[in-house]
Image 1 (tube, rainbow, N blue to C red):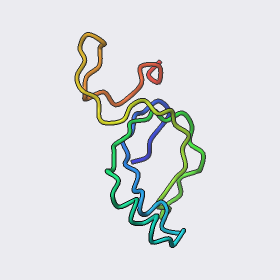
Image 2: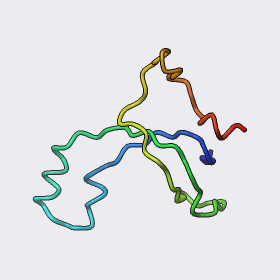
Image 3: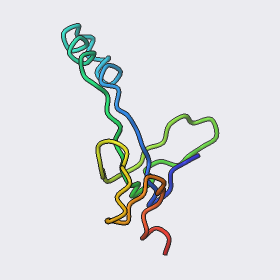
Image 4: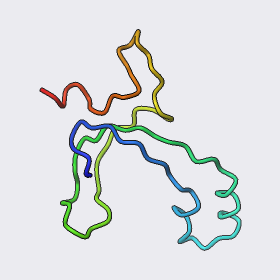
Length: 89
């Protein structure tokens, strides 16, 4: 399933894998000590065309929060929201 404009996605960054190419034991040790967080962005653009067999695509996104949202009924936010309201017009 590919994300589309206005959809929310959740992802985690893997600091060890992200900096593995540096091949630096000190950096690796520091990265292993970090806790991974979940981030929630809203997709603003698809930057690459999804082709069959392609494992990854590039997207432009706007970060909204660190961590998954908690229900906030006073702000009309529920944890099951999957799309930005403006993407549905």
